[in-house]
Image (cartoon, rainbow, N blue to C red; front, side):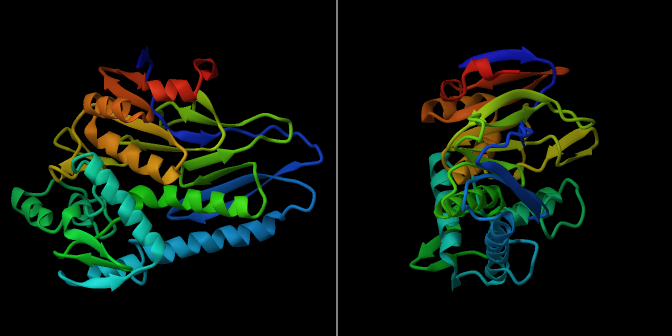
Length: 341
């Protein structure tokens, strides 16, 4: 494990600017809005490779499918229909949704409940969910009532059906973007594209090299609201990157800061000093889920968990007026210290 005391920093993955090289191959790019945010695709196009307009249509078909299945913000999505179903019911759902639920169950079991896909009633109660009314601290009675309708142990898969034992609501937002990145990357591979950088709402994956032989680079960003400053630059090839943090989505009441990241074991926002976690993994879905899981566990337990599990992770912890960064051995092995900026 490696620790460094720095000026305030926080880990956010951003795509670095491309160099404008022109060979027999060239970098193409396109993007647009998605999931309340945006997406962008950069890829190396060789002779006879698919044009950006075609790939954009195919990519947006994937994005539309994910949205129609998993959105918690549209009433007609498959997930919203399931969430309105009564306790004790089962419903056939598309295979991708089952993939995400199984991934969530694995993360929940591995972390003793620090990860949970059934927190939507609590997110709404605290003001962070799709049905939220106001950001506020709920009463003990309200919190207890919402917790009666949560718990991954009440969600199960039977064949191609998703079932719930209590009147719970599933929220896949903690892993859906990572899954979508993997879906798009797989599609690019099927289209014969071996070099790309995919970004969906800040979840990233890159593979191959640019026409000039340089790797794709992304930046871990300093925690500033006024401007974006790269604190560390990473070279990616075959890995996904996900960052979770409490620095942009929160509210304050009576001088206390309440993060949008909830601890499933308490039903309340996390209260430790961990500001953000960045995770690298060959599966962007897994990186997405792990960054949330480690964020819940906090600086000490999260770092110990990541080290034991061999997770490549970058932690940023508040320390007075500044921040301390810590990295796991797996992170340092994956990203040489010489890449620091």
